[in-house]
Length: 136
Image (cartoon, rainbow, N blue to C red; front, side, top):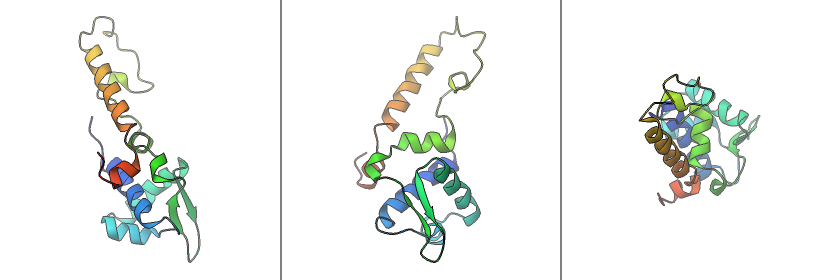
């Protein structure tokens, strides 16, 4: 499993909004400058977060983005799964994957399933608030 820049940047954007947008909407320009992310890439990431109901948007002079919920209500797992699609360590465990013809006799499948469960359990236990407050 390798987390792409899309997943890592989405997490950084969510942290930035949590730290800078508690009372008001934050402009993408400000996020882009603070996080050193191109506007084009940032717009694509924020669009995913918006469609996933993780952020709210507002147009206009005081517009921008802010979190839809409190930082403690988001898990790192849900942010990464939204942007990455899957966190499965092997292709055969990805959602919607075809059943491998070797799955019945695959001696390593239990290992990959257990690793997948550990990853999911850990990332779903860490909140945005935990990351911000360095409790990980």
